[in-house]
Length: 381
Image 1 (cartoon, helix red, strand yellow):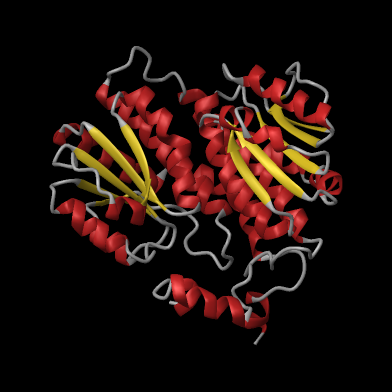
Image 2 (cartoon, one colour):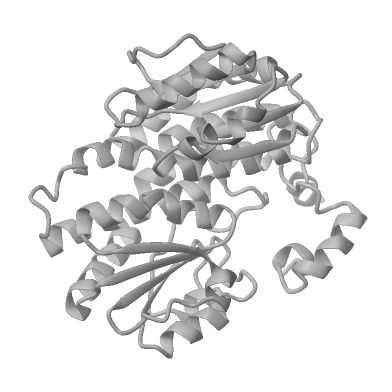
């Protein structure tokens, strides 16, 4: 009885909070043991098979995880990489998929509806398949050629915080291993030291920012709508954060790629908006600074994520991340404060349940039977 009571929590700390606290330790687990063994197997397979193309597939957070590592893959391996929503790829397949193509299926549970059909589809074309999942023995794990298994196992809550972080980190570490094996760039270790430092950086930042996150929530809680704007790998984070804020805050939240937002949608910005900009050290950093200054001039409430010590513009709240994190591996540390903000939004009670979202409401249960009738959310498999 007590176990069932703990399974469904009605106050802080929710299960998603526990998962957030696990992130630094789980990132450290990716540096040893089974994760490293899987990485070495995949790197060897890439070399033996002469892989020339990479396709990464996922839905929701898993799709955003793919986007977060796409540019790093291409820079360090010189292998063209493409990201697709899984069932969209099934209906509009890439016809160049062949024995020199690797297809990565990113799915925490390993039982997302329709994944197995796509595995069969690309295998029939000769592709090498990799399952990036956290669940051994899942249908996906049994179907692919090779696993990149994650630490932490299954989760109780529906939001994908720790699983998003560890999927990205495993893929980043795989890219590092591929760079060392393939030797197609002048400096395969360009990001190695920074990658290895991420778990401790995330741990230190999380502890310090936890007391600040409620202040950001207080700043944004009266907004009519929110916009989260990013570029490069952090465009993926903008999507992940917008999804989380829609769920937790009860405030409609959209995500935009920075330049596309500037060229059109920004014309509709109003003073009752909250605008969150993500600006790691990168060539486009100053462009983001200009966009945030413009948003504040229009009257929107502004929150900026940027490295400590940056000459950032005046904003309503500046979230200072550790300095020196390269843009192409910045997705995890820059997502962590957004999750912390999202969690504290959830404690206000204006959004969905922090762990269960809306899936315990009868109308949502019935509604999702139309669109995800075989999915675990509906069947409780």
